[in-house]
Amino acid sequence: MSLLKRKVSPAQSAASRENSLRSTGPRTERGKEVSSRNSLNPRLFSRVAGPGMEALGERPEEFEEVHKRLAIAMAPRDAWEEAWVQDIAILRWRLERLQRHETAMLAERRRKRAAERKQETLPASGSVDRELRSMVYMVGLTGVPDSPWKFQQIQETLVQLRDVIHAQMFNEDALACFHMLYGKEPGARGLMFKNLFQMVCKRFRDGNINEDDADQFELIKIVNQEIDDYQKAQALYEADHKESDPVREDAELLLPRENLDSVIRYETHLEDQIERKLRQFYARRREGVLPREQSLPSHAAEAAPVDQPRDAGA
Image (cartoon, rainbow, N blue to C red; front, side, top):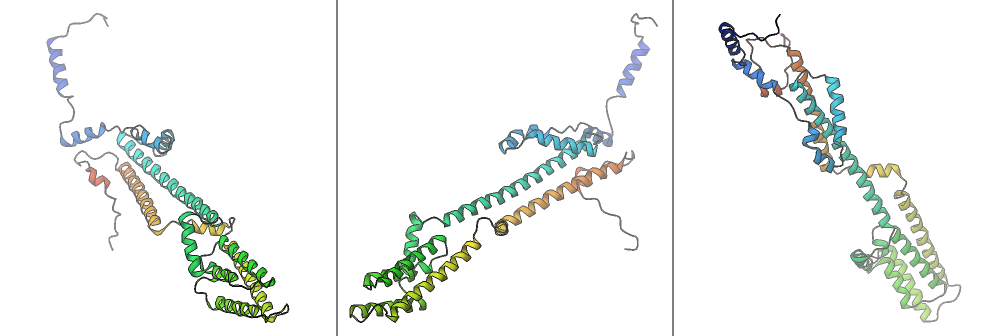
């Protein structure tokens, strides 16, 4: 064959023009629809949402690794199937993000509860202290909510009262201990204790008491019993609120009902979306090549779930 450029004849030029008219792309509606789908080229999600992912402390390259592994497993044949694979990867990434969010919420609840338990062991301060003092004035130390501070104050006041009785310092100033313990309107036990103390005080002022007074010993017995009772109550409280109780700590981690419902609903939604995308992907795989007389399904039809065939006798 000669390497010299040959002059194109008029017949060849006419044939080339006729052939070019046959290569102008699809002309039928079905052909145009197929061609429109060939141009689908999904953008990398990590490039679109990269700044937002980094702001959340996420690494876009880790998402692309998940995307890559799914693509290897599902082996998409064209750009349309690649888009489905990326959609599934995005949904998986959101599901993992939800799981991290749930774990972070539980960790925050544990940290907050640990701080609250530590705060319970400290003396009240500020507005809390004023509110607590007002409560003590009305109901006494025995009437305020249980806390390490409460048990410590009750036992210290009872020991102080016992020392007063031992020293026979029966005066009206000692009645302040009763008010501190049982409040403005004491219950039956506190009232009985207070009335006995006031009776001994009156006898002391009248000079009708000696070192072996039976009422004095009864007062000491009552004080010792109160100290013993509150020591037991403190032991039960500490056993129920100890720092190293994994069972109680795990029980406290349960999310509030409204938060738990939201997490479950969103998790179920993501799982349903993943399942729907997988059904769409493999339904298209089963279609193969459509007959020329059959039109392509619409996007809405492809998104609808595939109905299972029913038995003829059903």
